Image (cartoon, rainbow, N blue to C red; front, side):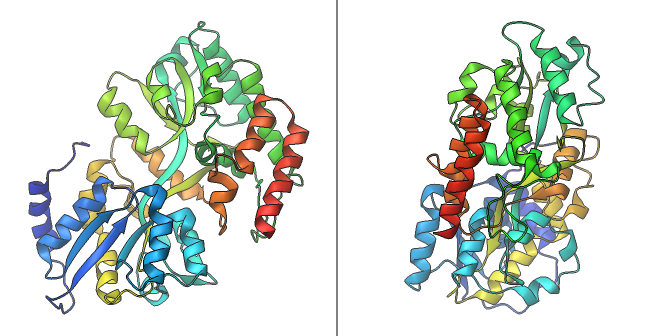
Length: 416
């Protein structure tokens, strides 16, 4: 079901897509598109578009670490790409700096606007206006080893729905043997733990930022303390391998594939890894739970926008709107195991019968992403306050000290 389409197959598909009604075209239009890291649907979307339109798109891959700097410089120099696929966490900074085209009227005209993944739509907003829409979406969730659940006497049909149930399951699995562990996290990876730890807080009704994103709530929200204590218990009881403490994300997805880990937080990108490279791995998926129930997910991936200064904004939007239409969303996205950007299309023939893919996709309905122009400084920086706070609380056990440290450094960055 998830076998990657060949270019030839896509060109055949594109003949069908080309039957969609098109606006008047100027065959002299040649557009440029930048993407931060190539993913299969971007290239396949561009190939299908180019095969059936007079206007053409040249795709350029920018190394992820260089994307923000190069994008800003290109816009400042008056030489921006016409279309850009941007890590959604950076969208507020680009929009607030006036570096993206206002596409509000286009978005309001979409009959399916309310079905677009909420986290990505929220990050594409600035001062009540739309500047981006989703293009490559992902959400965080928990994968669990069904065989280990059964060996530990757990019911794999009813995975944990609270923190206490997760701890009980971890302990039962850990008791199976010295080389078997209940859980995995990459404790030296800042971004990994934003993706998979923050949802535990959100699902419990808490947050590390205020509702208006104006201040940190690390010391004032009791759920933050409880979430740190939850992870500290996992570490103190040895329910996670010792090597997890120094893992920088290199084993973020692959550790679970070894077959000796009961549960791990991950994203949709890992499903194809497990299914294609580890076909004997018997696993399931469940949403990241709150302390007493509920669920949340970190909305990750990319949004697509038109950089300020593009000479072909109208044609660029025509391409963007086409990418969100039903046929490419199902026949290019879903057919290759990628989550459609329209939640109404999660129920499609390619996901039918695969509860894992459906659960992973549905996580985006409860997806959220922090809205801040300094996201990288707060959450992604390996020397930033987020990772330091987690390590002090979880590995050192100094939760009070970690909370004070996090609050102080978050505040300094947000007020700076």
